[in-house]
Length: 373
Image (cartoon, rainbow, N blue to C red; front, top):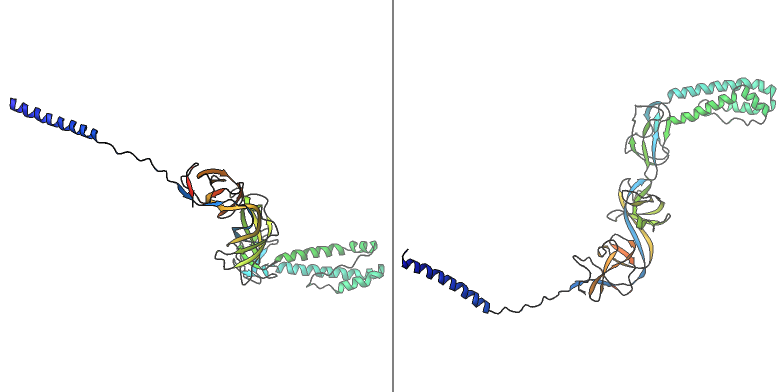
């Protein structure tokens, strides 16, 4: 390499180094502007002054309508199922006293007539001897025989006034035959199932034409006039509700209102929901009909609380903690929860005059500087 090239390379490197160190020297001479201390910004919070008073509140909870009376129909005799006064179908309505189901009773009907005819002959056959042996009882038993109608139930037996009369009737099987027929008459009623109340059919297990056996389930009926609202109430609220308490019940749109009364209160807790069932008696009317299975809202009013204050539920955290403002800083406090409503908590446990934060705070902690709105 000749001297000329060496001089050029060395000169280039020198210029670069000189420029670098000159820039470092000049930047070191520049004064940095003084840093301003960060200004602490206070959060604004909404508070309420703690002042206790007596209040009257309520509990509103959704419940499901159930029938007060739900009956399963069970066959007690054997025979073919026949329709009664109504068609035995799901959804069919009926009135109290209607014949719901008839089980074919033709054979039993004629057997009953045969038994009654034989009994009538027995009574008629013993009357001549009775007139001789017990003349004082003859007229009474003769009247009894004349009142027997094989198409109707047997009349009541004459009163057996003496031991001699009882022995006389027993020895001729009059008493045995009489009570055998009365038992058959009671059994004959089992062929006809009448409605014990007005309602509707909710389940049909055997329809017309099927053969029922003793113990066979025929179906299920419910009372549609007398209904109940089954309301699951939280344990904390259940203590305020008493049997006999009046209740206002309405639908979701609050267009229909019913007056109810608490008739039962469960004494056990549902492990799945941790609630206690309260039952409200309701009556369905033509103007305001009720339907089993629908959901309604029960308003349990008239609940009195003493020396409490209310705040929004969202202002409470960790179950029973709140913030208060003390000397411009946030401070945690525990409260005594007296009652919980849908959006409100009634509490005590703070000092009168404290300022409680009445709103939820995000990323807040104790000793945070705040200003009250």
